[in-house]
Image (cartoon, rainbow, N blue to C red; front, side, top):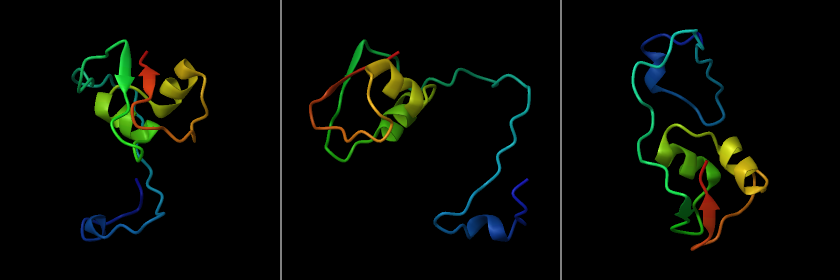
Length: 85
């Protein structure tokens, strides 16, 4: 859907926008990669809400930010505790 040929799919550029189809089919398996603890301790200062969301697999960065009352762009600190929905 992004207009890429198979030869171009290995040549993505920074900032390139891809279109990912959003069908009505249910995801075929459980998406959680790790179980949800009540809190998550940020392991390093370069951790982002996006990285935390990817770690769990079934959360969006927006959900984590909203659940913690912080901005999506908030800088996290080592040892910071995040509540996980």
